[in-house]
Amino acid sequence: RHGWSTMYDQSTLRALSGSFPPGQQGIDAVYTYVHPPLVAWLFAPLTMFSEPLAYLMWTVLSLAALVFAWHIAAPYAGVAKAALLLTAIGLWPLVSAFYYGQPITFVIACVAGSWWLARHDRPLAAGAALALATALKPQLMWMLPAALLAGGRLRIVIGWVAGCAVMAALFAVALGSSGVAGWLNALALNQADPAHTVNTLIHFFGLGPLTVALWALFGLGAIAVAYRQRRDTDMVFMAGLVGTALVTFHFHELDYSVLILAAWFFLRTSPPMWERLWLIAGIGAVELLAVASFAGTAWDIPSHAAVIVWLASWLGILVATAFKATEAKVLVDQSSASTA
Image (tube, rainbow, N blue to C red; front, side, top):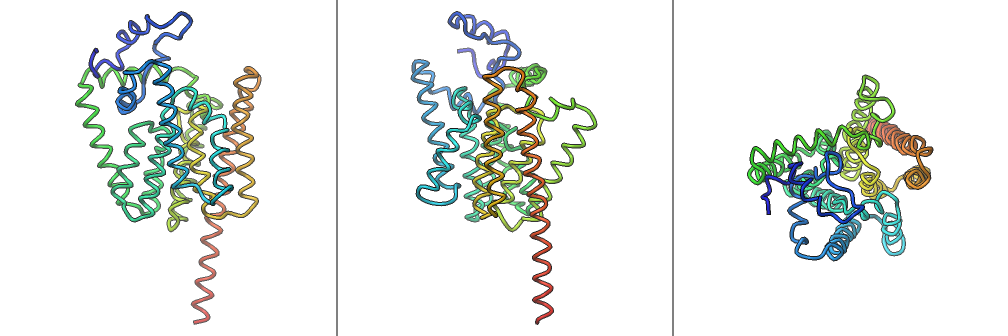
């Protein structure tokens, strides 16, 4: 009705939200549309239907995207594999993603597709799939290209850069200069709300030297895992996702859903039992977020801190395992050379 260039315009959106039913949240600087245009383009055809039906259709499509990712990426078979899907659907972050109609499962499907294409030696297509994920919700996987580069997957990164360039050109043409300016303004206003940093280190330490130092530490840890385990595509992708969840300035409870895919990649590597049990601790940590949502502010800091501590510990385990595996391989190679 108003053109794609106005999709981020605050005055237009406020006027349109004036027709919302009584008691519904109106659009303002905080509660507004800030997703990339691709999300709006995907949802636009559903506006032909009533709101309840459109919501149902979007939910079914979101579930189908998750099932697709599970089908190609989750390990095991039979009941064990089905249990992974049911566990994922029952986790609070994913429940929240479905409730709010977030495009997270589409991101998960794109990243899983990229991983599958990478394993089947189609690097440029894998990069293109990763570019689609970036165009949907970049804060869920922004460290993945860096992990892929550290893991020696240069052609995937080239495909990603090319795909992002195409998407950026499409966005620029659709929005025009005024639309792009409106998007940047909406992002700046939105980021000013502390609600968008509550699941980040900024919430605990502010945007200062300590936070930056921890970001650098966690980022380098994820890169080290990707480099040390570069022969294992599962580990490279997982390192990028875990690193992203720790090194971020804009993250929500429902964004932790992407760790479901990281866990599937991790389980494909057949880790020892004690490392698999650490994933169960992670389930408990993310479920604490649900307790905080219903029990009030008293649980706010403990619940969010629990997830970050668990994530940081998991990354520490991955780093230690990666270096131990490399050292073990060196010893085996030296033994083989000595025997020869």
